[in-house]
Image 1 (cartoon, each protein chain N blue to C red):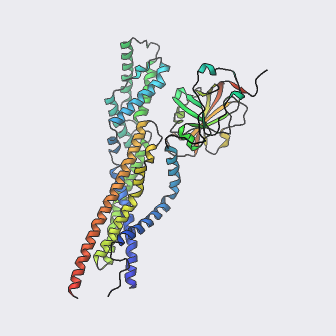
Image 2: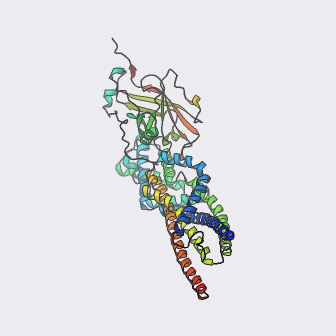
Image 3: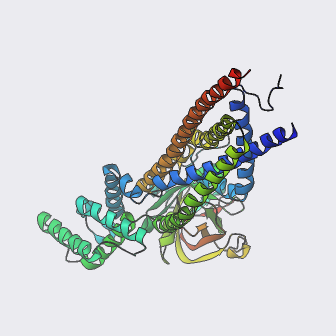
Length: 225
Length: 281
C-alpha cells in the first residue's frame, strides 16, 4: 500500500497551497514596494476627507459680524476670546485669487483638511508680530500660484479686519528656516504651501508668500486711561 | 521517496513563479484595457463632466472678472458654446496625449468671447466703452484654457507612453516565461493531473493576490473622499481609480473561475488515471 502523498489528494490542497503561495507573494510585494508605500500613504492621507471634523478639542469661535463694528483702531486684549489649538477663529480671503477659507489656530493635518492653519508659534493678527499660515497646494492655497505683488489678503476675525499687501514670493526647501522670520518686529503675514502646485503628496519644497500689514486694529493689553 | 518530495518542493516553487507571472500579466493587461487605454479619458468625459466644466468656468469668470471689468455677472453666462467646448476638450486631450501643446484655436475662442460680450452689451444697453474688451477676452481665454485642460494630463501622457513601452516587453516576456514554467512543471510529473493541480493552485493564489486589496478599496471608498478641486477633475480621477480597481477584481474572479475549471479537470484526469491502473490489479 502506498503512503499518502506529501500534499494530499483531497480538496484541502486547493485551500492551503494558494494561501501559502499568496502569503509568499505578498511578502515579496511588500519588500518590493515598501519604499513607495510611505509616499503613497501620505498622499492618500492628505487628500481624503473624513467628512465632518468634530472632536472635543475642535470648535469655532468665529462669527460673521457687521463689518462696520470691526472698523476700529485699537482692541483691548481682555475683549478678545483667544483661540485654542484647532479652533476656527477667522476667515482668510484673497479676492484677486478667489480664495476664501476658514483660518484655524494650529496646523494639524486634520485642520488642513478643513481650511488653512496658523502655526501656533506665530502671533495673532493685531499683535504687530508675524503670522505664519499654511494650507494645501491643491486645496485652499491652490490659488497662490497666481498671486501677484500688490494683491490684498484679508483676515477677518471677531475683533477686527486685517489687510495685508503681498510684497513678494519665494520658493524654498521645506526645512529652510531662513525662509521666514518670526522674531521680526513687524506684522508680516507669511502664507506657505507645498511646491510644485500640481503635485500630489508631500513635496520637498514650499512656496512662500509675504505680505505686510496695511490696516487693522492694534491689540493693546490694558485700556488706555 | 526523496525524489518525490523534491519534485513536490520544486512544483511548489514553480507554482509560486507561475503565480507571479500570472499576477503581473493580468495586472498589466488590466491596466492596458482600462486606465491606459487610448480613449479611456475621452470615454469618461460624459455630459455630467462637460456640464461641471461649464459651470465651474462660468462661476470662476463671474467671481474673478465681473467686478474688475464693471460688467454684471450675467454678462459671463453663455460666453462659451457647450458644443464647441466639448470639441475643444477632446482636441486638447488628444493633443496633450500626443505631446502637442494645444489642440484648439484660441483666437477663434477669443473672437467669439468679444462678439458675445458686445452682443450682450448691445442687447441690454450696457455701456462697455470703458471696458478693455481685448484684455478681458484674453483673461477669459486664459481661464477657458485652464478649465478645458487637465493639470495632470502631461504627467498622464508621459506615464501612458512609458507603460506602452513597458507592456510591449512584459506581455511577450512573461507569457514566454509562463509557458516555459508550465512545460517544466508538466515534465516534472509522470501523472499530469498533479501538474494540473499545481496550475489550479496558482490560479487560485493569483485570484487571492488580485482581489482582496482592490475590493477593500472599492468597498471602503477612501479615494472617493479625495479633496481635489475643481469637481470635474475629482470626478475623472475617482472614475479612473474606480475602473482600474473594478478591472482588477473582475480579473481576479476570472482567475479563480479558471482555477476551478482546472481543479475539476484535475479530478477527472485523476479518475481516468486510476481506472486503467485498477484494471491491471
